[in-house]
Image (cartoon, rainbow, N blue to C red; front, side):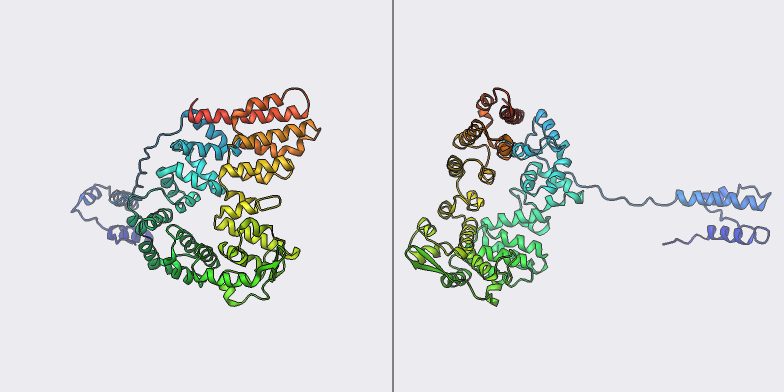
Length: 492
C-alpha cells in the first residue's frame, strides 16, 4: 500500500506542469530534510527541482523500515550415534554415484546393525537415492535420523521421509497432535502398543479429515495391537469411498478369525471347496459377485485376464482364515495340499492358499506349499535358516536353472548349506561344459548373497584359463569387494 508523501507529490506535480508554470514548493523546515532542502541553490528552478527530488528520494529510502525476513529454521535434533568411519563414508559416496549400487542395501544393513548414523555429507545423495528406491526408505530413514528429517522438511524432493515412522517417539500425544505424517504414524504405533483402544479413539476423531492415501496407512497401522475390539472400526472402513482403504481393512479383518468378515468368507469358502472323495478336492466357483462380496474387497471383474469366476474363487480362498481348511478337510496343510485339484481351478486355489499363507504368516502352510512351481514369496514366511535349506535342496535336485527367484528371497549372507549348494551347482555346470553366460544371473545373485568368507573356494574354482575360470574370478572379485566394504564399516 502506498504511503502519502505530500513533499514528493508536490515535486512530481511541478515536474509534470513545468517549473516555469509552477515552482517546487518549499520543504517544511521542521526536520533534517527541511534543513538540507533550504541549502539547495535557487538560481535555476529546474535544477533546484532535480536536486530536491534527489534529496527527498534518498530520504524516503533511508527512512524505510527493512522488510522482515523469513524466521530462521529450527536446528536439527542431536543424533548421538557415532558416524560411520571415514573409509566407509568414502565407500558410500562411491556406491551412491552408481559404482556398485547393488551393494548399497548390504552397506546400509551393516551400518544399521552396528548402530551407526549416515554421514552428514552424504545425506543429500542418500535421500535422493531412496526417493526412487522404496525398498530402501525405511532403513535410510533410520540411518539419516533427526538430521535427515530436518533436511526433508527443507526440500520437497525428500518429502517421502516425512511419511516414514520415526523410532521411539518421546511424547506420542504431542507428536500425534502436531507432528508431520511420519511422526504421527510413529506416535500412533507407540500409542497402540500401550493402549490400542485409546489410540483407535484418537484416529476416529480425525478420520473424516484424513486423505484417502493416509486413511489406508492408518488402517494398516492398526495391525499393532490388533484385536476383536477393532472389528467395528474396520467394518466401517469396508464402506469407505476409497478402494485402497477398503482393501486395507479387508486384509486386517482376515487376521481376525472370529470376525464377521471371517465368518462371511468361511461361508463362501465352504460353498467353493470341500472333500471330493478319493483324495480329491471338489471345486465349485462362485457364479456371480454380489454386493456383499464387493463390499468385502472382491473385484467384480478380473484384472488378471482369467475368467471372472476363477478370479472370485482365488480371492475367496486368499481371504479365508487358513484354520477353516483344517475344519473342512479334517487334516493339516500337508495332507490338504496333497489332494488332487481339478486342473481348471488348481492354479487359482493354490495361488489363493499361497496368498493366505503369506498374509497370515502361517509357517505350516508356507512349508506345505513351498516347492517347485510354487510362488517364491512363500519363502519369506519361513525362518531364514529353513528358507536356505529349502532352496539348497531345490538346487541339489533341479540345479540352478529354476533357482534364481528362489535365491533372491534368501536374505544374505547365505548360510553354509546354501552357499555350498550354489557353488557345487556352479562347479558342476563348469565341469559339464555348460556355457557360463547361461548362469550369469545366478552368479550375480551369488556375488551378493554368498558369505565373503568362501572366497578361497571360489578362487580355487577360478584356476586355469577359459570362460568359466574367468567367471569365477569375477565372482571372487565381488566377494573381495564386499569383504573390504565390511571391514571399512566394522573394522578388521
